[in-house]
Image (cartoon, rainbow, N blue to C red):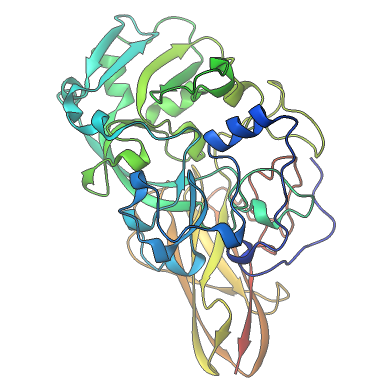
Length: 408
């Protein structure tokens, strides 16, 4: 990948207006039907529904940008200044239509098959709850968060900054489950999790099955979660049981997880083998390309967004370090020419959580380009520009993520 040499500022929140939204041309009517069924077809702004789909009807509609039935983004201004994202404002991203509500009618009866251990076994959620319990604060972020800023027209939902949130997950540590089943089998290199969605009829299972493999280094912190923000995990977000891999992109946090297998190789299904791979623009996905696993260091401003009054202005935002704790966040009001250190807000909930930040700035009338730059404890900082890639993944460039504010 080559960093872009031209910094595209773009609108403050293209997820709201999205003037560059592209039309996807499909080769056949059946292909278009499949895309619509899987929720991949974006809605034009004029088509954005006033109501939410039934499985997400409990969400706060005014806080969301509805891209499609299966993709809903938190508005930048609705992210707030808290450490934990309110469940009813958290973004939604489903690769397949959500299963029926009946699967959460008797949560403890949900079954999970565990393979690749010394004593493979199918266990109910009720049995998993007897093994152990832990709570971790972790950022959930779509791999394409920031895709709307790519100028080449990256395919997929045109997320701005709102395909991310910080969540409190409660469940059993996966390593405790492994220990209860006699330990790992010999030669395993990956944790392969399979979702329990019903596969659409007429489509090749390997093309649509939601199954992801991550390196076994994730075992130390992985969690089989049944609660989100101290409430039973909603169907909308993968209930009754979800694989949570702290510090890894959302696609690896498998919803409705029905099997966890410790394997020698990565799964060969499309979502692993060719999707969610970093490659040059115009290049097809392949298993030898980098997979979207650990998240990179990132931050963005959440307030003010368009205008502010003259005088003392509080500039708020959020920052995350992926799998590495944050060291600092700096803010610039002149497009990155000069920087000032921001202050973290609220408690530090661990390396996988995000940290809200604030900077008090005295602003006179005029236009300001406000940007933020985070640095983790290993010294990794956000770059200025984006790393152009075919699908618009992993964008953490600070320039694109800034806002232009008029002070009157």
